[in-house]
Image (cartoon, rainbow, N blue to C red):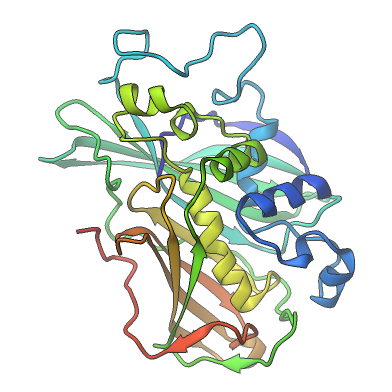
Length: 353
């Protein structure tokens, strides 16, 4: 969850995938999987090079000319403002409500992608609590040097209009939306990064802690890796006095990136086809997060199977902060340290109470 700029569409950005940048991004989301730093480990996983983590597309912000949440020399910065300044506390707010990715193949360090941004769908919803909410999609297609599509990212932004107030607990979502539009699948070869392969039937879940006592340093680390220096995530006066939160909050995409570790620990990198989710509630410094992955559907068998996994991330109080889904190829899971139980799955449509 987090406030987002309006975004610029109809532009193409050159996006070099540097191995050091990949390493820094993996560190920022707390993923120490050696495939993100060691070419030999990546080769053993069936990859042609060191891959980028699933949400690495967010780092495109580093290369967007004029990106508004990047400080510049000799340019006044929006942070540490007080009420009554040029950015009023009651001005319209744009929230990053949802993010979806569709993967044709892994993004690999050493290549250069070209990212084309465009406007997607837009719609409105009115509620007594929030007034008029205006939603719009920003679609980014990442193509390789041959012009072939590698990755599609869809960000859903929600703008709060007049007649309502921003909920500091959870952004509204659009009823009936799925996790993403399906594109042609890439190579279905599975990762074998150690451990016995365990086939999980639909209905069973895996659970694990994801982060303990989230620090401000980690939040700043993610700001540096992603390029998003929105003061909401590091500037206490701004977060409290302008945005109205009790403290700074973590980037919603940091929460999603941390949750993505649960998916890649289960299935590796090459088998991921879709990953999407909604930001349900803010994550604050000091929070501890746990993840749940529930296999809810299996279509086909073996490497031809498509497995749908529901995801939920909760904080130490049991509040749901992120829900999503992942679509993966193949039906085996290669992380024996994960606890497999028969507890009921948490549905992606469950609201924060």
